[in-house]
Length: 180
Image (cartoon, rainbow, N blue to C red; front, side):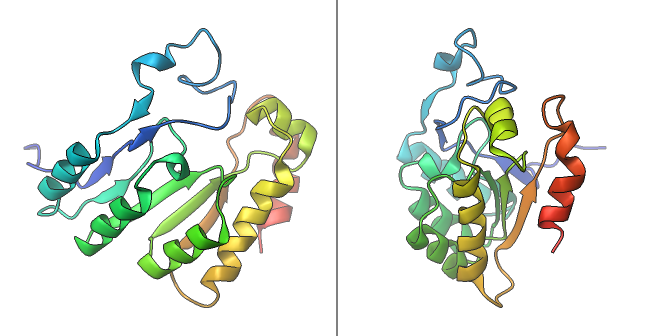
């Protein structure tokens, strides 16, 4: 099959910055990883040029890859440009810096999907898999966005749980916690 000129899905790491040090992360997981080779912030003009090029294809854009998208400078401007250009926007976040103002922005812009990486139901397990104890803060961010969205369709909101040896025992409790 021929390769399309422009892709239907684009991962655009606007800022490879993270506020966690998850052991499984190939970039931020340990001091041995060479995060310096990918860490940094994409030049605003470069990201604008990329988005201008992508406008014709209107791909699904995921504004993160190895970083926490909420730490990207100019994230609002970039998302507004994506949405104004008819692109779908889906992101994964740890939610630690999601305040009410950003939640409102996501709803107003009709960001298509926001997935929160939770990976635990107890603080002790979160510490093992994400390196922090701030489970309540992550959960609060999920509920903050749900409340801000209200009865609107967008953004679709979800939570994720990547099964690992350190959290496998909490799968059923996670499903029970979030099924509703």
